[in-house]
Length: 496
Ligand SMILES: *[C@@H]1O[C@H](CO)[C@@H](O)[C@H](O)[C@H]1NC(C)=O
Image 1 (cartoon, rainbow, N blue to C red):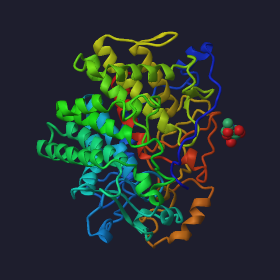
Image 2 (spheres, rainbow, N blue to C red):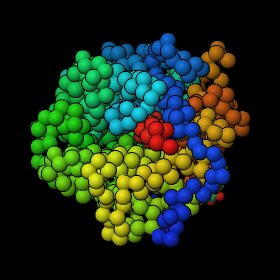
Image 3 (tube, rainbow, N blue to C red):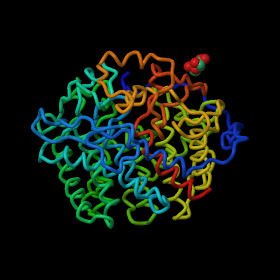
């Protein structure tokens, strides 16, 4: 029942170049075109289902109620709010900050075309930043997690009933965590752009906090998984190191503040912070491909020639995603889904697809293509690759099922999610204690509460999907699967 232990390197054979074109075609759809706008709406509803704290009057996902109203009290601070990361009830700060950064990036690049969903997307960002502001309210301290994960994972309980240990974990000068602090700074900085014209005072608060948190992350360097090993490992252990989050935080601060110091920081620290490492990854642990794509925009707009190496790395990442090209970085399932071993595969699918789309837009504006060792990849090709992944998620796949709960004719019904699988407080007002939840966990019946919009970990490397709660790697949704999908769905809703 652990969320996402570290991914292992995958070793699936590459598909031959002759399959390349096939992967771009929706082979399994005699189906009607997808309703991307409906999927966008649902992808945002999911975030309401993950809310912790006191729910607002405009809460649309009605089967959820207030929960964890005393978070932080044991430490004498207010840490209510924020998001549960997945199917459990812990508030893990590292993936929550990454989720918030990607939600903000989705709004920055695609908010203009979100139509009626823009307001909901902004609320989803703000639910994250309101919490991150509480977690960083005291100088020199960042609260990075609420909830003892062992105590939580030992129970199958609704968040509304929670009686597990709500320990508040923090980092400080003597217990550093440049990874989680760097990501938190990135989230606050990215969100400051979202609110710049909508709520200037809030935007300024976010940016000034981001600057402080980044300074703290940089001055006291270290990995939070050393400082807080027992609380964060193996759940969201930072295996990849904290260096990438410092570059990532600086990149977002550069974009948000336009201050030269951040670009200079990136250039000066490029080598010592190992900007050239493992560039073909992007997720809550590893930010490299995201840094490269984000900074490439500066280069492509002719603003920052000293960042050229980042664009070269972004090109390398894109080349590694082209099916049939001999760079054994990213594999595809026979049905055409990006696949990396280790569980919760959809997180890679959505984050990689987001980068394909974002980069494609930056390239088109500069009239550029990506030069790979054996081919050239046009912006239009990158978009087709991203769309193919989104279409797979929505139902163009060998099983003909959608991996988004509540979308399409068939979708996962037994997702690994406590609140969704237990009867709601409305249907069953009496408390359901820790171990009393087990019979719902083990039940073969569909979940009683539809967590609309949740995208699960997804099928295995042979495109098979068990739809069973104990198979958490396949059946658990996470906030960082959905966050990049918000931007993707907005784009395809507006361009289809
Ligand atoms: C995927 O799941 C199916 C059905 O459970 C199973 O038969 C198959 O062996 C699995 N594939 C891999 C590569 O694990």
